[in-house]
Length: 395
Image (cartoon, rainbow, N blue to C red):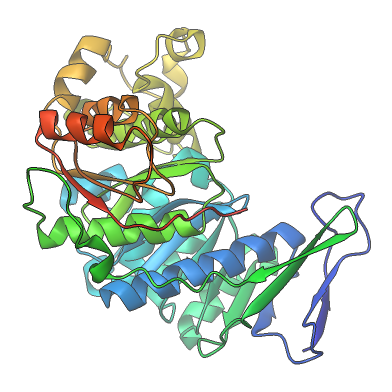
């Protein structure tokens, strides 16, 4: 197909809307089910590039959960602990350990469940039945993958009363060297960002501590590739083969770091006994659990976090308070987290905030006039920092 008419553009009043190829060639994807929207396709095509590049960099299946043209998380397929499965609400999924692509999406979806609500899913590998069953029960707009098993396709077609958007991408398609976009009638042209992010990017270690384990290198690659497709400014925390907190689209870099750090802290706190053992009533829906947990683990002393709720609607017994002191004690034990940035850190305050979320490994371009202060902070905390030498702005 050479052209697809869309429901509308960014907003319902922006009609007509369609997609096509400039050279009048066939589109590089097929619509197997449903009808795509403008933002759906922005999420799908950015997300596909992200997971394809993670797969190429790590050799492992990858998945991402996209919302409004930025990833909420990205992950590789790695076996999950029982604790992580429970935190991600996938401890009841049969065959999860045997499906690398399902595990990748379980991790990506489970990282920041509040932000992933109504996501667009991108998968690097063929979607199997296990992954399809996981997708079917979550609130999601659509999925893009290089293929689907027959059983997976039938499962997904049942979603959203038969209207769930299913896209099949041509994995061999490569974007043209030059790309264009229009703003206010003005055409912008630039070279496509085909920068390869690979292990050789991590060789310039500038800190006194130069011990960079393979697991941290993999987390750095995942975080950097995720940032390549995240609205700038952006930073990402990563751990155990996945991003655990992404701060996107902030004008101030330290605000990115604070946002991403708060999301990373939430991910860590979801894994605690206090959260995993909440006495939910049978039949409580996952979105309701997500909403309560987000308030329950909030590190900020905000009115919405502390307001009294009618606990009898959600719980068999009233949950015990989760105090700021308890949370801080738990977070102070966190270590081995990676932090990546799409541009240089201009001040050491980013490093101070990263330390509070357990950061041990830092990767950034370098090039600030205050690099010496950032380096000094990393050395003070015993961190390992790489200069990759390239910026990853995305707009």
